Image (cartoon, rainbow, N blue to C red; front, top):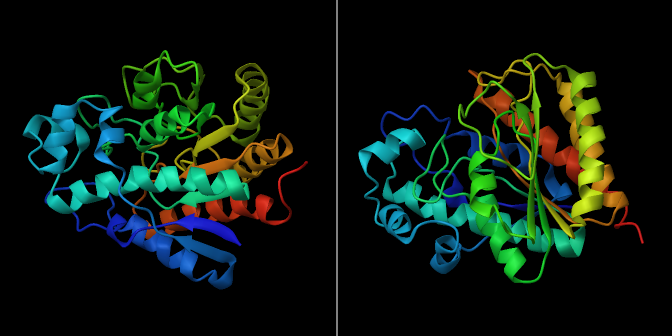
Length: 302
């Protein structure tokens, strides 16, 4: 069985004038339900405010909690922070943290939301309110873990890099389209910036050449995986050219790589955009099932 973390309030009503596809989380949930007994469901608790404030500015956390985020910050985020959105913002980091805890005992677990890698210390950005990856990583690091955040979203994980910079117990890896959002990039521990139009072969060559030596150097004991499916050639916001088969190849390689090194792997949903919400949700479903399938076949190698 594949451990999947989901909360009903991940599916929040769409705020006014939002361009984000708010039905995506519900569609992913429904597709996973269709897998029947293959999925082992887990419901997270909201991340305690103190752990959110360990990463984000306390004044900004208060603005979100009280649903009074200034209009300028809401424009950066891309939607209004309603009370529903505010509750979801605290639940999603709790889900990524729970997925990590489950992965430690089971090898792999997936959060059906999260990967909010653009959120910065005092503001959200790019459809991200709080940075669940950074929040979960800091909490795990304070518990004694060495965390590597592997971000394969087509957009650079700028917020994650900025919020965890300087911590010896957290490292960040981002492989992304060089000319895509954000215009101003942060500095990850390792950035692999790809030119527009890179296909399956070029992508896998870059990934397999750069991630293994970094893992050898960093020596993590846990990977948080931002499993964005927007490097797909047909993605509305992507600039790369991976096929559906290429996305599967990427995720299977990541899972095999982590499993061979006895590294627990916890995934967060990440980006995926298109005019057909079901097509996007199916990309995410395939990612979760591919990752989980590698670990479901047998326990972590001894």
